[in-house]
Image (cartoon, rainbow, N blue to C red):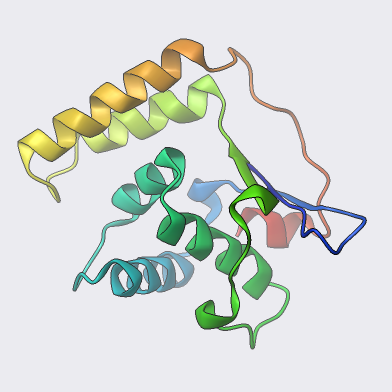
Length: 147
């Protein structure tokens, strides 16, 4: 997933390649906790958050940006992250979408109708996604970019 944050008051965008499989469990737990709190739930599985990012959900995108920035600025709080919608873009390749679809299809953390809706949305996105990955994006630190 290529994440680009380009604040209006900044000449240079920040670009990260976010690879969810490179997340440490502690970071995954932090993401789940913050996302669940923002959407008013007790828990929110990582796959649910990833799907919400893909669908453009504001809370999910905000948590993603917090995660990426917090790797470098460890005192940054989720409450301090408030980008304009136009400042943040997230792009996924077909292989990433197919992997996400498989994870959701095998998930027992959501009811069947919710899972079917997510899979249908992913199938539509897969049909129009680029065949190949987006390539290596520039980032400040490859460790920070992957999580």
